Length: 390
Image 1 (cartoon, rainbow, N blue to C red):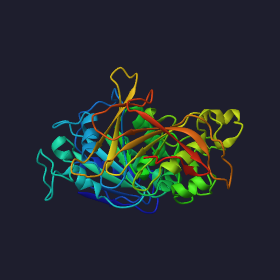
Image 2: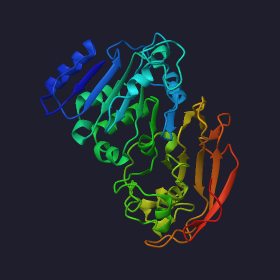
Image 3: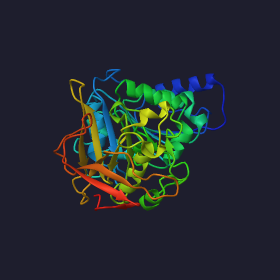
């Protein structure tokens, strides 16, 4: 295992020397910005994988206990198999390196056997040569050449949970954002859980003023805690936009924390239905917000998104850990009409919100035409649902 803690900026030459040492020996101790890097396995190993993959691979994980199968799917979608090697990089803005042994080993005691035990991914047996965690807690760290060198070398990348406002504040508009988009352009598998899921839609609940529950969001869709990125009143550049996630806002911990109401409030703010949303008459710059849709993922579940071989559609399957008793459903939410009542300090009213529930791992959902499971509709009058939304 290698561990690296950096503080106080130094010259680029020192960073370059440190990176070369990392490539050669897997151990680096050069000074730099305030990030932390920890690797397990052989991060300096030679990798024999294509630079660009032909198909898209995205994982949306709903938080709570991680879904082992989703990590294995990412590894395989990267083309990694025994003998190829492969680097799996975990990104976070706080926390430690707990994902490294979980993804790399097959069981306690640093097992690397082919069959992974429950609660372990078994990445080494699948062909991974390393799992590497970067804790990037500042804009200076997000611009650090070493951080970006590690990210750009990734063969699969996963964004951990935490606080998505840190990701927006610390990473958006930095070299790290450019590095992540470079990976997306090469179809490198990318996933995220909880806060990491939140930033994988074209639109995100940014949580810049803290979180909000459904009751508060429905009672006032202009509550100051509803901070969206990009801001619907001043649309700008989104942070990360994987192709299947264009026009989509995501939410996690969906059923356990009863987040259907707040998701619909977010979609209303962004321009539900015909696009008028909570904005009244749209300006030309705001018309691109029309038709925004939502995906809510429950805890202990993950949505695996891939492009079809002909690249015509994006399809998704839901998976969960086989020992979990949780239903682990994924909800696809689309307003069919603009809100009836959507003003500051006034409870939300909106008619005909379409919901599609995916609660098994056999059914395929088509994200391109938004089909695959039957739909039902709900309405909200004066901040209250007309029927249970789940």
